[in-house]
Length: 165
Image (tube, rainbow, N blue to C red; front, side, top):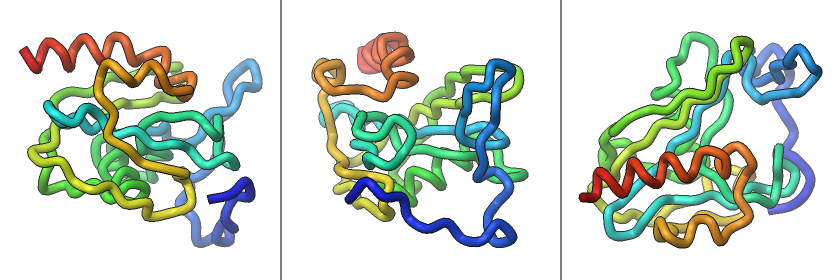
């Protein structure tokens, strides 16, 4: 979809959550109120991965749909909203299984793990994706993963394999 980010609306029309949180060491994390992503799992198809647009933070890597939590929004609602915007994830087909939270005191990221009752065709709804694909659990590590997702993937995979029985 390109290497140039889309134009943002003027600040007075944006949600205040669409901003960087800056850590004590100067490291930036997207989402003034934290961020959340949706790990969509189907027992036969695997998980839904998003190839991130080059212009985005860690662009060119693969991860899960997600983004900044809006003011007053909880992490599950934020993950569902972002996944619908970025990948057309139909809320009526998914069930929340569990959440995992990375809490850095000044910022947090919540992975919301859901099971989809059906394999659906993901749809790129904005410019944040280069591609969307269902990937078998044992193939996920063969992709160039977003660093944060890469760190959490093994533990998430074990939980999914346990649920699958």
